[in-house]
Image (cartoon, rainbow, N blue to C red; front, side):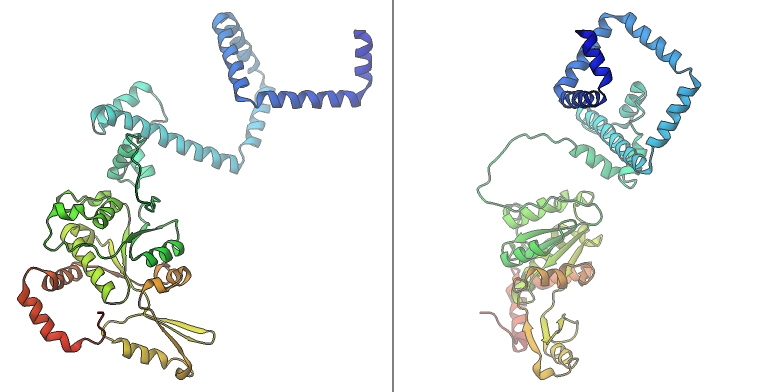
Length: 406
């Protein structure tokens, strides 16, 4: 019977091909299961433990086999075919991740044990393990953190955080946690409608929005404990990551630019002054190092047919003068549709992005010490505890008021 089956098999090429295909499919399906591979690996490990002579024999055969010059040349050719530019790039990326993960994990272990990144202990650990994938600390900083040791230490401290406790929130809060060091913009958007438009219009790859629900408290004369109890201020401190006052640490700043976005009206100016006063009083290095900006949204949209232009405020020019000058640029000023933007919430996300948030089009004013000091001075006069300066200011400037919100 066996001989007849063998004769049938050897004389039927179509059956041979079908049989090989079926066996190949069954093997691929079996070995694609991780549990099957693990079982076989364990059986192999146990076999060589029980039969050390088998390991020695396999080693002897391998050494003998690789003395064959033809086999070595064939292996070289196969390696050359395998190492395509794409394969080299993938291998380089894999090694890049391996070096980072193993080095930071080792540094984290030392930080956990000693309470800080002890570089002498780390170097001794590298020498003892002889693990070439553990980078020198200076090489680690240079390769992954632009040669900034403080950033590397912070990454080690934050690596592999563990969940200590889970606390349910009673209020739903939007969280934007994307960080791109050196490029990330962080906007303080005042008002719910502004927040909605800004959140929808922003580029999530490098822009984060923190909504401020109305005006923050007056920090001019407030005690520090009162300031830290304010929800809006706590949200800002948490988002920026620097701490405030004596605990301020600029190295922990999570964003490159902090942009204040407020409406172009009296309330917006008031909110902007409150924010500038807070930053000046409690986060002064933020201003000194050039991280604080004020967004410049347009105040008018002029349209005539397909021609539309956004008009931005200009220093030393009143709104009326700016509007009249802008209208003269059209062919028929009498037919221009004028839209006055009282608040950013009146813009749809596309308009807000195009005019105020797009780095290619937007206009930002960098806040300097002089700007913040002047805001602090004005706010102290208008909202401080001393009444006479405020009375003199109101009496002197009352007749200059053109638009009054009541």
